[in-house]
Length: 373
Image (tube, rainbow, N blue to C red; front, side, top):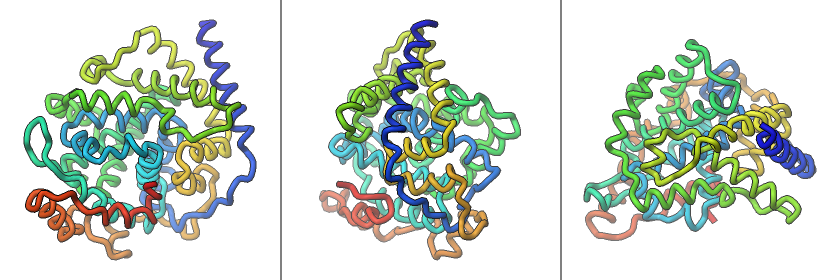
């Protein structure tokens, strides 16, 4: 317990010092156009606004996703997360934050352009020889549920604790709303804890801890590659944060998944890391401006999305829409039906002409999700 207390004190002290030292020149917070798809009173805002979400929760999601052979094939083909991990992390986190907190117009545009981005993610999965497609509904469902489950799991383990049955039911209903922004069907989203567990039990035989997957998971567990450059005086904070986040993320993974992933961590570390993170996240959650700063340090492109919600800045139009209403208002197709010509053109290039897919979706997305450089 003395060791736990010392580590907790060191981490929270370093975190507080870093945040206090950086609390200068805060940019203005622009209000959103509306409340987006959830809004005040939603369980999504309650869970996703806690500091566990965009740290351990998000790291857990992107690490576990790599066990899907189709997904790791697409990731390995581009190597983007290896050569530009910070920008890839920034763009991905911004998209998920838009779904949870963004206004309906911005989020609908991001969802539409993501289909274009994913049109490039096609090829042949080397283990099975089957085609993979990042826009495939099954692949999108895996990413979506892994993210929402991981965010909730981290909230329960290192945050305030379990939701009530009514809150959890609402959370999974809201998860289904979020699924409407991807090519998967909201009808395929389980609405109970048991249903979610059943989904992962169903997926387990399809998951593969290949050498490529294990290498990528180890890479993503090193939070230092995602953290921004800092003055030398704060370098130890990055090092401590990376070690603690890695241990905390592995601590949320079941034994079978650790074994499949080639990850080892003792029960002692599992036990020590829980109180350390609980206290650290409680400290981080105690000040809204500190939370905004923390998000800005982790993901500059995400800060404008979450800042109005964390700081209680009301939107210019206090309404909440459904994704269907938003598509009708702004003129977008359902993601599963969007940009079919581009997707076919990309398939012809890759499978017919044996050329690399074009980057047009990636290039266009920079204005919405952030630069790739």
